[in-house]
Image 1: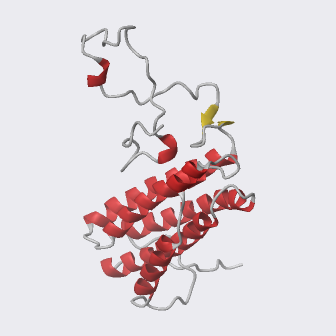
Image 2: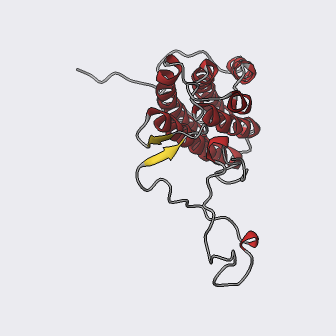
Image 3: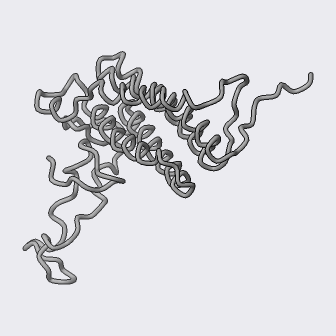
Length: 230
């Protein structure tokens, strides 16, 4: 099943690999346009296997695309994209935490692999490939503590603001909360590892603290909530 290890973003998640379409081209295996062996061609990105509204889990199940597993996978993918955008803004400002964001993006690929491996149909081989440990959660907590010690205390509700880097990190935090809300029902149903939900919960805290830190380092003002006059 793991015939293709690259693709979406940094690397294609385990649950998505091996879905490339085979058998394209002429019956003898050559490209009909270039007469090159098909092995010389890059695999096509589309598979057509989802045209009927179904997709596959890593365990091989075919489920409707509206299944809560794919809702959780979509939210996690969106979170990864949001963090990628925040990382680009932050890189332009020379923030040293960009490498941490890159590491988080890699971890989110593993989050997706775990989500796409429902425990009800997973075999031991699947579980070994997609297990999710507590270690990255503890690492996030260390990062949170380190940045929190450098920040002024919160005395009001902070609005998403503080420059492009900070605002993008706040947006990522909001997407992270949604991804967590999608994952929690899977954990409660015994279909996903509890550490995945814990990681997303801690990640949203990390992104909030990091947004404040980015604003502080850039000398940008954080807008606060002001209650409108009645």
